[in-house]
Length: 322
Figure 1: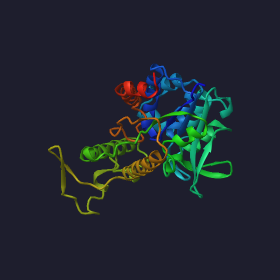
Figure 2: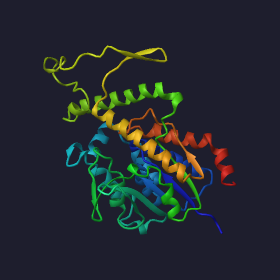
Figure 3: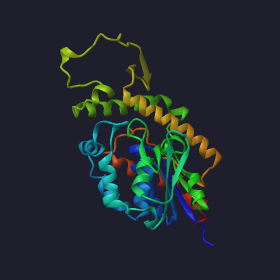
Figure 4: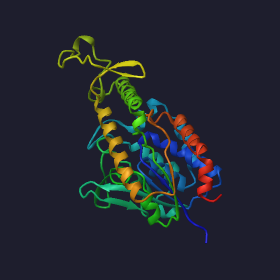
């Protein structure tokens, strides 16, 4: 009997576009999938893949620029979240998925978290968009989603890389993709600089948009010089040196703190879950240079997805007996 192959696509916000390149390269190796389970952005990409719409999704994300991303996310304070994401899920419903999971050509599942009970909630039937939207509800960034009599948030809180869901759905072999494998001791100094760079870029983007969130997430560059409060806090003069480059130490912005906390949480939970239920093959593209909200960098992310599989192609074939 042919063994069922499952694909577990992990969380990671904008970094999830790397899933597209990974799936394309795995298919080029001749791997056919029977089951796909996704968490957060992994559920978004996974649902389109399960409906044979991956190429259409890729074509769309490659057209996105910073301003289109801002429009799609619905920048502005929403009830329970900083952005609404309404247009993102409208696009999913109109172009990439049918109404119900049962209508998908491939078995599909998404994982979310019950906000008030702290429990993992898995969707393998019912409305596709509601399941994906619940799975993508990053705490504080997107509002919690009310579905099936529960307030649901991002599945990454409890199961960032849903290997267990793949196996529950009947997969004999599981290939998993972890998008948040950035916490390696040998790279900590460089990672600190990269995270600060990601933080700075996103703060500048918000400032350019002249949105009120720029005042919360970072310094508003459009604020008149004579109105800026420069003496509220003492200046930080201590510097850090990474690879010979001195950088002033400054406090992280709101988005930097949130993004860093999410990365840490996902890394710790992922390690724990994968140790208890390891996949047969684990892919970990290096995406630390991309901020969690930089959805306009799809070309780089897809390319890294391809490169990650190419680097491990021989090992993947060996593990699958190909």
